[in-house]
Image 1 (cartoon, rainbow, N blue to C red):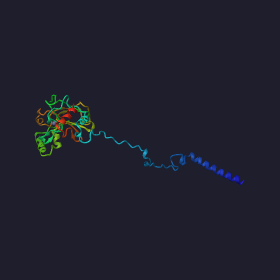
Image 2: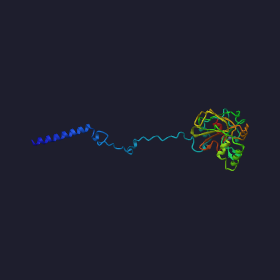
Image 3: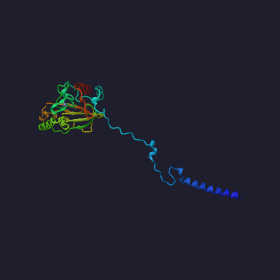
Image 4: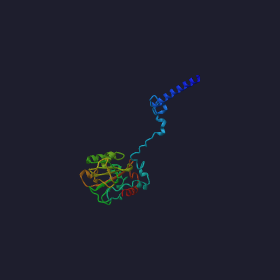
Length: 268
Ligand SMILES: [Zn+2]
């Protein structure tokens, strides 16, 4: 009898425990029945414990990486031609002439400096050059400068700029910019920049940020920034055209023959 009573007591206790357990289970209060502990607090996830699960975003690719790091003129000539093969002539049908003085790298004693582009003059480039001849984008790109408004310097200003240049180690950049006259600059793939200078007019519908296609007219030939422009004369009518990458102009410190080889093969 004693044994039976004890067994009954155990059975009662076990039954009550089981019932409590079942109620707890139904109320979702047991720690292993849900992600949340019984007291309802949410344990903060420590991200450092799950490093391998964190998706690291891809590093931002620069919109456009330079075509070449440093001075492109240090590359073998064929390699330069290959890299810049997306260019074409800025004047339809024009070719690079034989005159060294019209090439990048030629000395410019009048301003104590160096020529940084190639000149397309009438009688030297195989096509007629006069005021109003279309100037074409030499490659696909985006306009980064376009001089819709331009005021020609006076004779006195020009004399002053020449005087300052003569006293400097080379032509100061702001003065050189005046001597280039009305300009358009276009940035191409690989951060290569082309500059078109001495322009008579620029395309009215173009603005900074606009995309241009190779061969698209962007301006017309003029003589702005040259002495005849001050008096309204037709002398010095030509396109001055430059290619830049990483603060170096194409042809910098190269021989005239090397520069001619480059330009003839790039600006076809
Ligand atoms: Zn020039």
